[in-house]
Length: 256
Image 1 (spheres, one colour):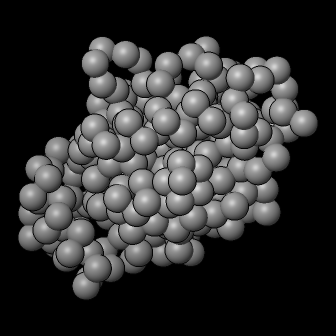
Image 2: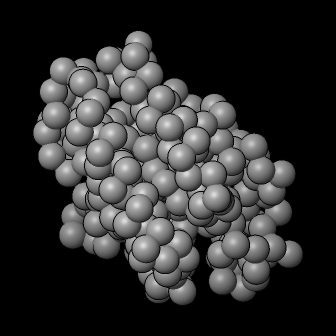
């Protein structure tokens, strides 16, 4: 039985969405059509986003007309839910650095930086390691790459498996850290404690007693950053190929 928080919604269900590749093209803004469809769905049931990026990056993609992104969704989960909002209000957060410890963190980052220096790829830009509240994000090409450079690296990575090989090296060298390595987006992968994947966000919605929780994501394969929540027994997973695919499924399920 859903609580009174969403008493105005006729359907007592929740839809959660990955951001890149699901609501928007990677690191680009959501279309007006997408935002209109989400607004229509929100009149009927609760909605939320679950992104691996920090909130400022997600806001760049989903904010429109000066309204805060956490006000346009019932739930806002950045960094897999380690930074969380419900009805525009911030919920308690977690910290990667507190969990792993400063000394262990330094060893991990030193190894990553040495490995990055030795990788031979066509181009490198800047911001190769980004520290976030609940994880670190590692990018062989660097997060400062342009959209065209990101597209080219993604195609190169599919052939040469740069990220997959990098992840394997980290697993071999830091088994005692009990970390998860999750490849997402076009150019990077996330590193975080086991269990701090996108299923972490589900902790924040349990108290509402939704009849169903639907999750939409594009990286739903094993090793992708949507895999764990997509396959979780608490969700009904929808694997999408593009934002247009998300719109099609939402219309079929809730707006027809």
